[in-house]
Length: 293
Image (cartoon, rainbow, N blue to C red):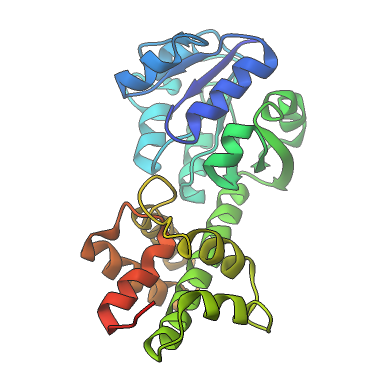
């Protein structure tokens, strides 16, 4: 079974490594960062370009930072589209649904099938191989490659036509972004009144304000002052909201609440918190309003 993987970042590296370990093979891998390639040499065959990863066929997966990177990997000078053949490209990056549709159309002209994918539950689940993933495109093709996806995902949900998995992921992040911003704003009201953060969180969990966001992001991380760099940062959240804003603008759909939440995240980023875990927005609100915690 020929398997390639492009993008060895915080999510991609453990995903590719789980493929290697659980399927007992050496995937072909590429990343623009030489340090990432050096780290992968023990369990993978390092390649010089996306084209090199794809030249043996089979399936090539990617997990990349943004739309521009996916376009370069799929359609660029040394990209997958420079090859022809009966193989599959499966991208799991958080990008616009329109981008993956365009990539799929271009690759189809070269005889390459495209699966769109998206991952949830974060880096810890990627490391454990217990991600939940959404996949779309040709359902028979998804079933063919399900054993590969199962090497890094515990739950695999088929969504439908190409682009839908990306949209579901953006919506998931949208819910999280708005809920964290709303919760942070509400908590700073109580903190400004003199109620400490732990009392606020534990009290609100006993009422109708209870939520996954309150119990996870704020109880498990904010109360333990564990909102520094290393997890999903504010700048990444801004990127994802912006993708959805542009998508909604192009499709004449409102996104008023998301635009407001985005303004709060942009303020926190401007204050120096861009790389910090995004519930840190509460810290920025505390500093801005003088709320104690």
